[in-house]
Length: 233
Image 1 (cartoon, helix red, strand yellow):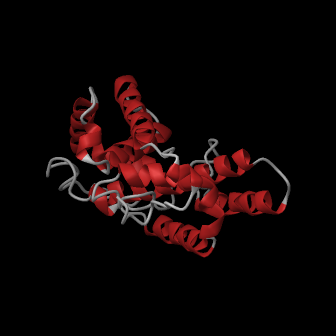
Image 2 (cartoon, one colour):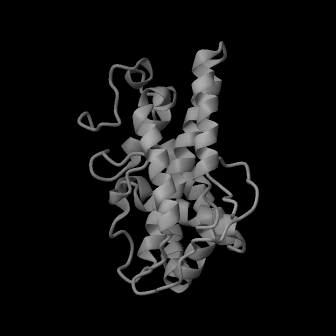
Image 3 (cartoon, helix red, strand yellow):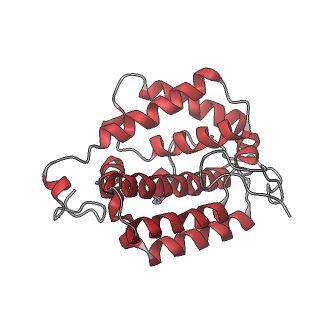
């Protein structure tokens, strides 16, 4: 994995072996299992399910060999094959790119003001995770035949901001490396890299379903996630 763009051997945490992909994979798997067990009723739950399923499908096969992983992925495949378009339509009401962009100011401020490094790391990690989830949900929804071009355009603005301020996210280097090491393709699938999920699962998952665009449907307010809850005009 030394050739991965997500692995930074010059950092002390990397040299100490702190980034652990299994920690990330265990969290994603637990979330997916809990959602499948409880059932998906709300738009928030649909959003979390699509994101968790996609993250697990992005994981290297040897890291999904743990007990319960194959079963959870198979159940997720079945659910998406049966209800993918509906879940996608609901999930696409959740992302709030404008709120994400507004919260990035807190990360900028965290570097300009005295404070604990742990707080910067937590904020940077949450911003990355929220944007990654939103991008993954859009990606899976598109595979299910549900497009939201307005949302995709708004998320591109977030991606641009991230690319222009990438140095601020060094605070989340442990998280970035753990996710990158978990990804398929020799550790080259990190946060916001969705190509590794392409073609995952049975060919029938979301294969031929179509639905109307979710553009214009919004969930009022926020749910504690910066990238959630767009308001409509």
